[in-house]
Image (cartoon, rainbow, N blue to C red):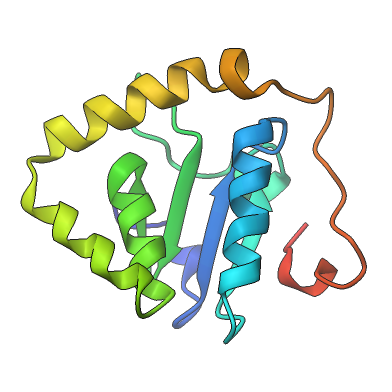
Length: 137
């Protein structure tokens, strides 16, 4: 999905995530540890910029990826993020061979159960000073 004109920002790569989800916060920590070139930036979906995202109607998403003026959702977002990390994580792109309805079915199943399986916090976590510059808000 194309982003609003006000979002034009070059080659910025932003991972929007559910800031109260323990799985999502753990995933962000995992990404930060593997993003050696520090190309990814992060913002909770609960942030001002996250709330302004044009989400597909009737679809909840726990992760959204912004790159080159486009927004990617669900399994496509996950695969695009892994591809941005480079080798060996970009090998996950082979999963694009699977139909999106199948990839998103698995994504939706995990997303639907993420709070039950991994828990949630009452508010978005605050990044440590070592990685605070990687977060937009």
